[in-house]
Length: 391
Image (cartoon, rainbow, N blue to C red; front, side, top):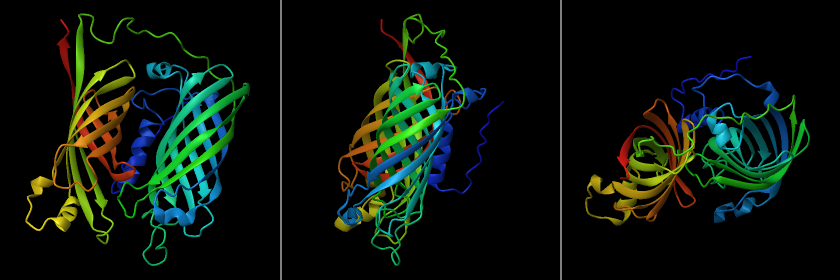
């Protein structure tokens, strides 16, 4: 039986919808470019019960302190080594999860519904026991949001549609072939990346327990792989640095501008060195322009300013975790200039890069200043490899 995923053009969808669409492709099926046979024998159905609370990371949110349960249902598929990246990551599990909760006792908060693909990486893997780290990202719908007339106290979220990010650390026990029991801790995060304000975001840590059922026996692992036994580079001693040149575009609101939207343009030049088949590290030079900075500068600057002075160059340490055509990128950097210093001198970037072809990639990037999301952007880029000899 063939399993196909059909991707529809998002058209005029918001950046949050684009976020979910890209992540559905990159996380649920990291090797979508390579058709494969659906393995029903590796299918898992799982139900979880979580119990947690809403973190009051802003003073205004302390009135919503409460504990509450959440429910979660997942369908997943265990990999068995059909592709090289599956064996490199010790045979992870990919799937899709539905998460549901009433967000505390206050009628201001309402309910949350989230649907997100995920990938679960085994940290310790034995026949009967596992310790896994699960990363999931997708789309959430919150039934209540900020409204200046009817829900003015609820200033955490300004939109019904939001990005949903789930991080879970779990212990999994397999008492019999068709049953798995799990327990652990998780963090659920909702945010719209400042596409609508206010956007404090919601953070919900919880303890979790669940049971997963397998229909049939699990496929045996394919352990034999044809790989170079020495190093990743050409056998004449030539090594490579990967160079990426990319762009990112985003829009956002500023909380005190009555819904006015601003454009953000960003470009980056990244030089990365392969540490092994899974990891890359290097440096990244960023150049960004945020239209909302002009308002912040105008509050303290009475003289006319040059718009070019709002351009912010930055330098960051970069790291990538590679899964075939998909890579997860993390940057920690500091600004080298720019008029606006209200957000501080440091910034963080997290994103997904997906190779559309051998050299062209799409990127989805979340930029933050400490715990505050600045924007979510999408873009395209080009990569090439610069070869050199050590001797």
